[in-house]
Image (cartoon, rainbow, N blue to C red; front, side, top):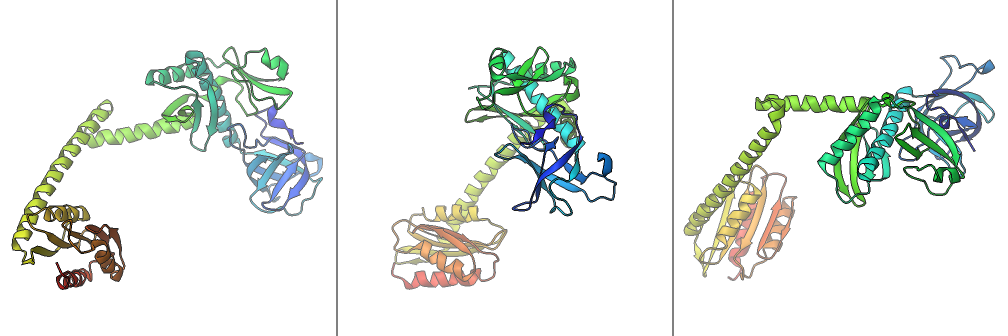
Length: 418
């Protein structure tokens, strides 16, 4: 079992160790007798860094010594910590003394995020009795899932404010180990399942006490700040996304830059951007409605004209027409208008732009199969399509051959018995 140095000192960024085993497959990895590398667990993602051979006296190896880059760290089933490497191990064997070097910036970021989660989860419990059921840390955000049927904007802001007040008070964050029986008497925010006789507790002074194996700050002021970013309903309650420390600064800077750019586009103040967006959306909806009405009127007028011009054959009119600058939606709308005229209609329509398309339609009750007719046409043009007996549509990559396809389809209709 690997001796986990991070349990006792989250600020330990370098350590000496001995190689216990070398793994070659499926990925190169090292197992050490002791490590400060944190493995992915408890919602917190793993450390990265490097492992270098130690020189005599356990001093760090010289700069030219080949370093093994640690890309992932995981727990094994037998309690060992596996350090996965970027490249296979060379010139090393079990018993070799090495030095591990943690990626400091990554470790400190994880410490801030995880400690922020403890403060935030405690705030939701203290204010609203909303327990955290899970925690997730990603590369750019973190989230907690709260066991609650509802979550209001005021509750979110109140919990965020309380957690940040605890940060500003710079309360101590300590680590201690207790038995499970003792832990049960201490009023932990959450008592973990009975897997270990001894528990590691993270104590934010006079605010939160909970069992946790992760890396944490030593004072809440080191977190910096917490910024809640997003909430959404999930199966077990509500998910709250947040960032802390420099992540919060970066997120706030991106938000401010985006808002500033939007305000400039609207020639408005930052606070007026939501109002301007709502006004623009209302105008867009109004214009869209007008455009739809215009399309309806245009299709109706076009249908009336085409119907009047078409020759009647045995009580049915065959209409064949190609359009430029009309999309598939217009063709379908026009086909619907045509097939509702006073006499039965077969409409073979195509558009050359903006995207080449075909629509074949007939008044209900006619004997032809529009889906089969269209499929035959688009397959020859290298396109795809489908539909029903009375209405089918399809698309092709270019407009070459559309006129010939319509002519062939029209010839089949004309040669059939109406």
